[in-house]
Length: 307
Image (cartoon, rainbow, N blue to C red; front, side, top):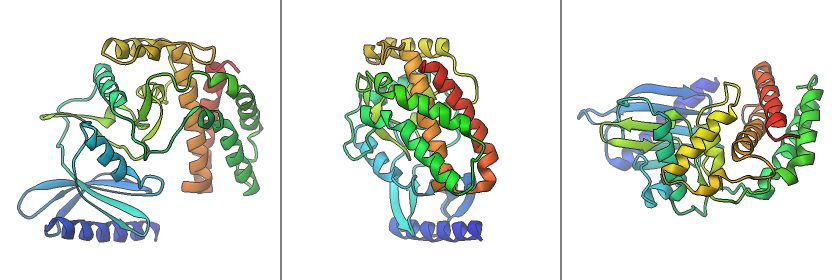
């Protein structure tokens, strides 16, 4: 039923978008679809193509972020039309085609330098020093709600780790607003840097916010491997060499820039995973997948932030 409802909603959104741009209904081909959003390539009868993207809360602010990014000269896909239906956002945007190659570290550095140099966007959510320090407490609140629902009952270690991090947070958030502070893409991975025949573009601004740019730099290499402060340091040095702010290398919260960035990025990810578990996804069947990831990230946070 859930999937059929999503399909019906996406069809209605696409109808609305086509009406807005004066096009007949196209053929649809999935690129990436999951429970909370989808991306499709659509082909119109005249042979032209576009990308159709749809998403529900909390991914429904992307159109706003893309417009602000475009206004600031950032290379993002141009929006042709947007529509809302039952709290779902639908967007019709440029089809950038198949990438000519995967993005590498230097591509990521160049994208980050340009993004962080852009004028901050006042309409985006703010993650400042107080917001960063509040993350472990927010995660503890999520855990309490999960336990009230008779979930995550065997997670005392998660509670202990979050308590340690919360106690040390005020000291460890020192330096949050050092440059680069402004645009944070928040889904900043090689797959978000599209390198096509007409240059490169940044994709996936659904969770963009204003905050410490080091969060982006720490996310680029992903979270599936054990975090490598050495690799992170090299990446930060490449970033500064390419024109990024030199304070990206500055000590923060009594820690090296690389440890601070990796530690707080993992803490940000933990709070997001736990909010998904109790609010956005709220599916007990997915707990066995979420809990080990949260445990692993928390172990990394405790080590990196030295709490």
